[in-house]
Image (cartoon, rainbow over all chains, first blue to last red; front, side, top):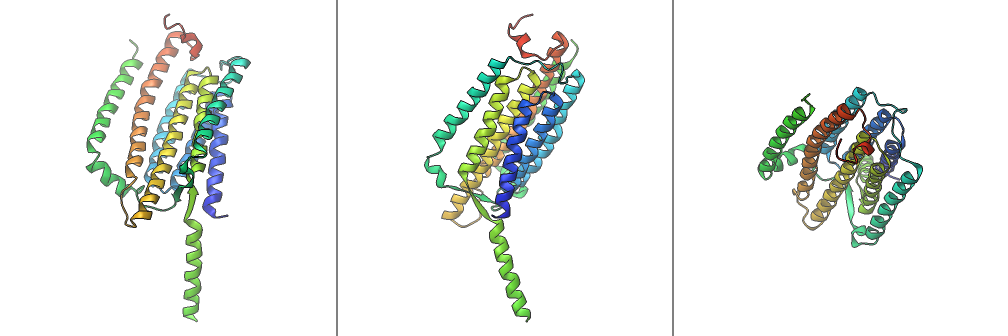
Length: 166
Length: 135
């Protein structure tokens, strides 16, 4: 078994287990920390796929910024395991069955397509490097990039306006 | 003697390279991301805390991002098999993931502001309190 294969299975197991812990842990702070673990595992997958730029951006933006924002909000509201509202048992069971059915249907639909013979390059190719992505981003996609800066500005203004005490 | 060592070294390097470069079937990535996405759906359906629901939406976004990156690498592998020159085929998908992250960051800032405002008004983040859409 090659080292990359071992890494792939390890990261997959880490991602799935942490994702389950996000959903099923009672304390919201623990949920946030498990979600950070999921993001680290996904970043590991990006590195395995040689998408180094996205791996670093994922760590900085998601695990670094967004999750800290979540953590601050949860600590601001002083949420913990005792104050956590719970749905009743039947609704939870129905939710789990519904999600499981969704997964089953998608897997069954995609299992036997002709795509299954395609391969994904691991640790190869140079499109994920920052040099290539930057070149494409600032030539072909420079207009969406500037539009997204306007989006950020409006989101910032919106967050301040909404969060202001009337 | 030196030649022999050199040859041995090259052989070892080749085997190491073979070990590092490894092709994964796309199906594995598909199943992994579908499972992650479904876990996100289960979280949205079973939790009542608005912040956890929001986090599960982030989880679904990330599952899709991972699948997009896997598809971009698959696409590039197919392009390189036809024409073995380094090309930018598949870079669009990774840029798309980048833009998804940008939009997700903006969405989180506004969404958390809304949740904080909701907590200030009704002193709870329980989504069942909001099912009437009026006070």
